[in-house]
Length: 497
Image 1 (cartoon, one colour):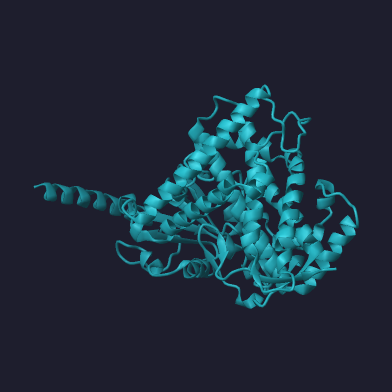
Image 2 (spheres, one colour):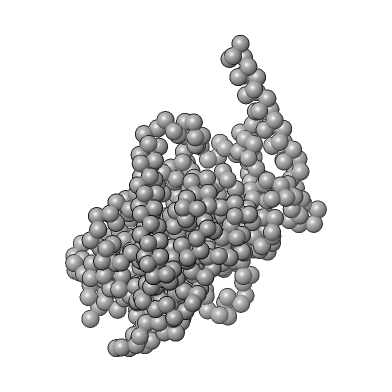
């Protein structure tokens, strides 16, 4: 009797979901779609594909349907939006500010800016904007410089030696930057403390676990995933991170209380009343957040900040190693701007116009966040007569958008920083290039990333010439949580002078 009851409940739920999916499809008949199978929809297209093949498939769909294309898996309906004008409309609409739970629950950070529900995000984003304004970022520059100098010293041992994976080093560099500027850790502590290495391992492991869940639908349901060895190790690493961040919270809270709630700042400069490092900004407003919420925000900043900047920097160095003419031109600009003793600050960094174009072209070819999602909180009129139902997921394939030949020309696949000359930018829709997302829920740390990348590149290129055996046309990418190279970022270096 119990088995029959369970079966009937399952059948009722399944039938309800299928009816919901059928109603969705009827409403959106005018949106084109590849051929689907009964019940499973387009799931058969993805089964058995690895990360690289999945990215290729969704990119080909975007090229085949340059405006909109709908896809569905069982009861889940999604619309891939490819047209820059429609992208702008979707990502600026109030009713499309939600992040779909099914896409972002993998991060297990209910309160972080990346995955928080809109009602929560709206309050927290306004609060945290202070931590990423330019006057605050200016105070981080000495730490960026010190960390980049340590990176330069660290890779000196590879001069005239065998190729090495530059990503291994940029990852540790950017993690040290984030730990120092967001958590108040001293760089020397990050260099020598074994805890730092454990934090690094834990962040890497939990990120890999989220990526694994994203691409392994058979263990996607919690009930199955929670009996796998991966789950128990992931819980262990997650608990270590929670304990580590709680210790940081307690230590910083004690420091602030001893200083009468006045931050000493990263560099000792507290002249700006709006300035504080990320964790201090939270703790100076006790009562607004629980410790769990604070931990979620810190883990979000730590995890999202260090890997994206590190990967983008490694991509850029590899592309420069493949394009010696671009590398040489960039070095000329660096020498012209900084000379022998020009100070690195926001003003001098703003003069690196060619470097800005190089970084943007890197982010066009290899956007670190290749695919992003939104969910409608109410029925939404996307085009005249086309009503998108509440609860529908919008998908934006930034990787494909940045390769559209009707936007970027016949040489869209070619690495060319001149794509970002002012006269060329003026010809394109503003949503043709969106490496940091777009709209109100764009990346809060995009200026942090640009400044830190400029400083790392300046330090490295003034000291080393980069080369590689990996040809540009042989570069292959895969979408995990971020866009990753299918091979290592192998480069060789020699002294520049």
